[in-house]
Image 1 (tube, helix red, strand yellow):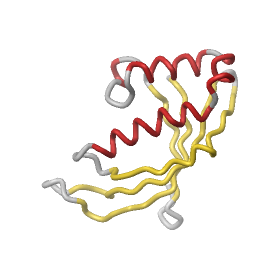
Image 2 (tube, helix red, strand yellow):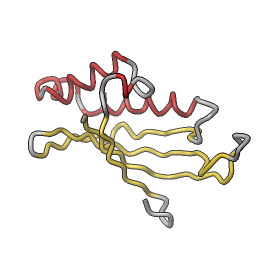
Image 3 (cartoon, rainbow, N blue to C red):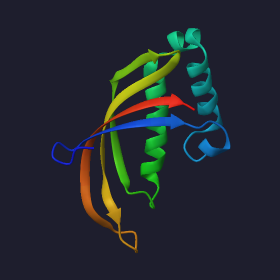
Image 4 (cartoon, rainbow, N blue to C red):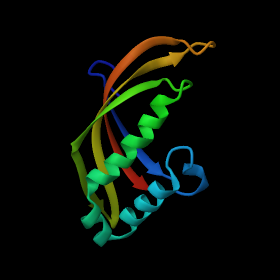
Length: 123
């Protein structure tokens, strides 16, 4: 994270199963597991579909009144696939708008807009 440029890079290991139910619907988990497990499925499905699933997850998070995240704006064209030592990683860029933190009543204390690059894989 770089406060001056307001950029952030995150590596997200997606835990599939019960631990991911708050972030991903069961159908999305199946799609993600198929994508990351099979090169053929990955080639057919494409990195953009993984980015769409991730976007839907963040949009659900932003819709929650308890979340400091208020909105996301994805650049789906930025979605790329990289493979290292047999593991697939999907990178995607997006803008976030939210609160740095919420006070005890849930009110926003200091807004923050950031450009983020997330790298997704499964664990």
